[in-house]
Image: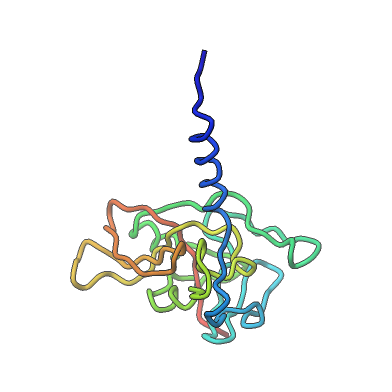
Length: 176
């Protein structure tokens, strides 16, 4: 017979639930309100502050238009790539009829960070169902084996090995 430690099981379950809830910190200004973005029906969004056009879903996910904007979503699991593969995915992407998608540099990717929230530190109504870490196109100049990554759990920037690390990809294009 299997013995289960009920308090431990409940604690682990509660921990898993807590990790899935975005926390918003009220005393920090919201720099990424919904009004900052212009939504397009085909799964693109324009950031009016930076002028950049983003894919709302990570590579590997599918954009699903709901009956209301609140029901719009990204389905599926984000695919993960090493850095070279991420750059190649950007080169061959033809989403929404555009062929000029690219991997964002670290500053562009960091512009999506919402500092008034964490878990995830991004506007999750604009960018739903995100992964934890995203590659940038920026190599780490002080370590040639690394490139910069934005982990959207807290929104900090870290350096990871370009060859042995796998992370998600969100593509961007310059404004029109």
